[in-house]
Length: 373
Ligand SMILES: *Cc1c(COP(=O)(O)O)cnc(C)c1O
Image (tube, rainbow, N blue to C red):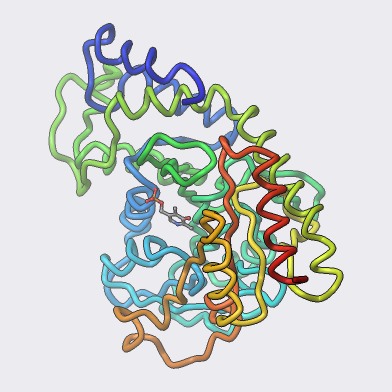
């Protein structure tokens, strides 16, 4: 395991005499993350799902509200708002990228719309200028699902690079095992609009003003609002801090792996056999994921079994949420062509810190063999 994980956990257990949340390691993580994200406030959570739920509570989403988000995303993006009784209005993906098609959003906005949830798929930014313009025009909140987007940026029309997760009113990150920086299960809520700062801490601490009490700002604490137990223990924070200390190392390794995939598979794309990821010029690549697009569901299935024979685990993900068992009857019936296309044809190739360049070459060789014979 990369970094001083065992040592920091040991410190959390034996030295700091506080294993519950909001201790020394939580503070270190929040500071380290805020140095990168430069937000109003960062709060560590037990998952990105939790951070999204906090965002839904802070936004006071209620029954009858409408929330616009892509259909091609993880369930949690929708779950937080569905739990508040909101209706999800699913948007299609872009023709060139699985992220939300910004051009399709405006016609979906009604008097009931409360928020847009851009999901930075594969850590690649949505067109945030466009989304922010719509939000301003219709007075909507923007809550970024930046689960995959640590160390990735959006270049605005002013040519400034802004960290993803710091652009909307609120942002949500994941430190799940499958993400670039991880602690098993973990997440972060970024509060970018100061109007949410005070309440966010209360919702985080089970509806109490305990955080203020610990800072000595009030002399007793009690129940002041709604909330839940959103904060992770110090053991989780200690693990995360050990990873965060090595984020640059993690990122340079992942980017090298990503670039190698791209270079070795380019000939297959030239021949029109597969499609490779496209990074728009306003987005950076944080090498969260390497995917290819097959030509059909059938081709993808045979490629998966072919790779399995060489013990290569390539997986697909995200079945369009508007077609899910839970939501299809609530969906308004619009066909979302590209969301379904990515559901059927996108294939993720292995990409993790411990993967070697040799393994990437081998995987690419097998792919060449599958397509070229
Ligand atoms: C991983 C992920 C989540 C959920 O993150 P957890 O930390 O596992 O709750 C939400 N949205 C997207 C886009 C994700 O990739």
